[in-house]
Length: 375
Image 1: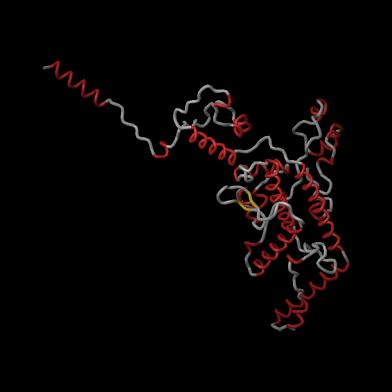
Image 2: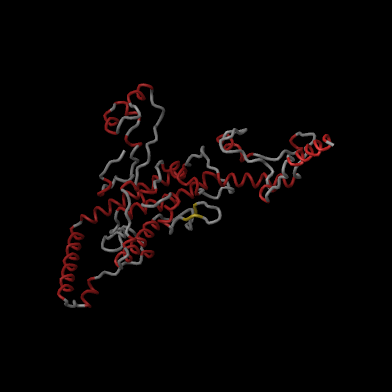
């Protein structure tokens, strides 16, 4: 009896120690491959995978195989699975080895030249005698109007209407440098307007150039997750949200929503503009329309419409060395050396100033911001 009791206890213990049955969730049942843990070693490095996954394919007999067995899924399902995986990988992974093409380089140079010419035009207009006289007259009228309002007197309504010049229709302007009497459309541009003007063109150019350089219909545009990376890759500048008084890089296109926006489904940068624009003056018109709208809101008492950008919202491209420096030059120019020491260093001849400040870049026309040299 004692032996039977021991056997019963042993059997009960064995029953209690049986492993629990595992039940997979619906999501786990759809998985065919184990997802590697974060930091775990993989067959390929991320760089090698990024450079080669676009050529992945399912083997076929025509490649010389005697037999191909599909253990888990059939040939059709396997090809569909791989195609979907490659497509998602293309859309979500960045191309580290992508280089801006010649079309982009030419467009950037054209823009820099035009941007400088517009600034020069504004400076000349502001310094003209006729404009100074006009500004003085407008200031005097404003003071007289304020005085009448303080005294409780009504001004001549017809005279006030004559004094107030009607703004031109932005989209009907043929020459943005002369909308009449030598007055440029951008005569009231402040620093923030110039910064947004440049941002508009850069975001438009980025998404168009990216599609041209990639030349792959499976990559519809710059993905939101890699926006800052590609911006730096193309313009050699860092896209910093705080310079535009926003919290995240993805919020920057919202400032120029008339030009660029995020596709809600693909999460890539898009534009409503044509790829081959007849004229880039459309960006000046967008900037002026936006400025007028903000001014109307400010005049109505909405202070949230007032922009407050950092002076670094407009940056110069990071210098691109012409070649690999010599050992002597590298020793003479340590990483901790400042801009002044660089300018005084003979070894700096390996990086001429022209590579730091491209012809026609911001500052060639001067202006209260262009006069400042930043390295």
